[in-house]
Image (cartoon, rainbow, N blue to C red; front, side):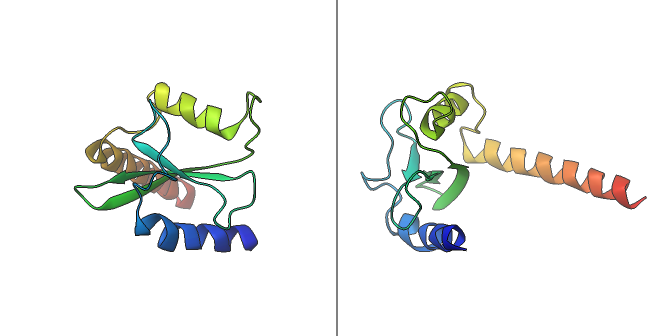
Length: 115
């Protein structure tokens, strides 16, 4: 419950105040992305997001755990690899297309499960 409350506050209050604030923005080459750390989140959790200024949209991408620098499973390293491998949509249009594809797949699975 504590984690969910911290995520709720982060998503609804902290990030929207200024998603481009320096304390959110990641270093190059990931500067298009932000991450929430501390601000109520348990110590080793990171919430990664992407803000689109023109559209005034913030997209929550991934909740990473654990943060353990140097570990190959470190959530910051894993997120960086996801970005570098092109696993995350680059534009809002790509993101929406990906969501529609996921929704369509989920619908097909629901139909198959209810038949």
